[in-house]
Length: 252
Image (cartoon, rainbow, N blue to C red; front, side, top):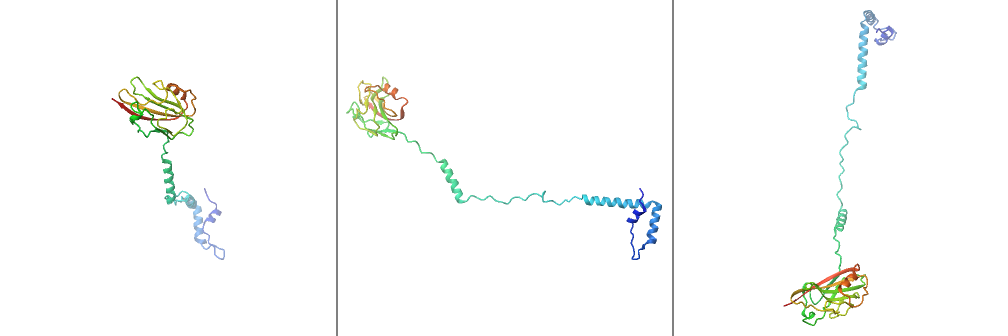
């Protein structure tokens, strides 16, 4: 491709003097005319233009390798977790202690006697060998909604099967049954076919005598003389709580 003389003039150095004539008219013009005639000027100028375009492209597409703000690795956080204050620690400890506190044990009804301890010998005065009077019985932690009490004393070690010594029902709620009070409440029939209390009287050896007290939510309303079996059936489903006291008595 050839360039026109006008273009060539625009790219060649044309230094003007104040008078408006070429200051290098002799030398540059001669080179210009010779270059056009020889065809080498086109190749010379094309090379200059190509170099200029490549240089300009490299300058415009140069990659800035310096890290940008967006791509830069964020600095590690230097914020420290504050330790709990004394008040916070105390509150946490108090909450944990309250959550792990063991609940108080439930209070249950109990029966005892000042005449003997649980699983201890019953004094002779309360047996058939003595005065045959009932011992005093104390009842603790009686349920508030108790309507009536049932008392049963029997001997599970009797040779012919359990022997019933004392049956009483529809007893008014009380914390104590006095010594010798054989007629408390309504009396049932014992294994001697009588009513009231019959003291320990084993044929031989040591027997257990179980005093059982039942707190009921009703009165049985049964007539005097009911058997233990009848009382047990009648109070089924109405027992609020029960307690037991065991005494021992021996005979040779």
